[in-house]
Length: 220
Image (cartoon, rainbow, N blue to C red):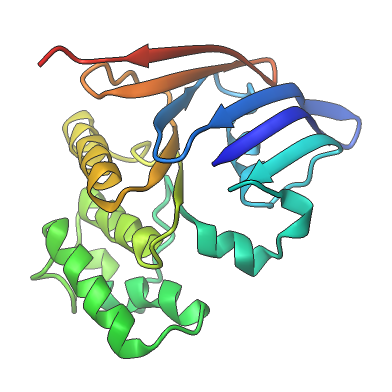
């Protein structure tokens, strides 16, 4: 799904990512962890082309990154953030539909899919409410549904529970893992939290490099 070879990113004269080698298989569920400032968020920005690599090779779904237009890239991936990024003046349903409208999909088709996913995350009774009327956990569920609306092959999440309490955060991570299996989508989640209760691969970043990979397998 994602392959990086010898990738480097710098902000001006300051190196942020250095000699990064990384591979995320199709259908994987993985965490990216590391201390603040080690390059985790820049790594995600590189994947959705908010920053560009100065050197190295990056492939998305087998295609070199430089050969993909941004709209093609956005068809392949969904993105969620710590701050939810919902439009306050639009309802829950309207916020979700924006993702499909941006790609020119038929309204009836995306409305049906949006309602299905919102029901799946427990928000079928919130479709016509506004973000300010929801809890933080509910807002993040809306953001997750919006990211999944176009059936991407990959979901990227940058500290998706950073604004949530511990119990709500655990619920969101469990939901993401369930959706990963149900929707058959790869997920890469930047987080500072430990999640030993979830089957996953954890990648560790230090000083702008991926330095370690470990798998958590639960005994059921």
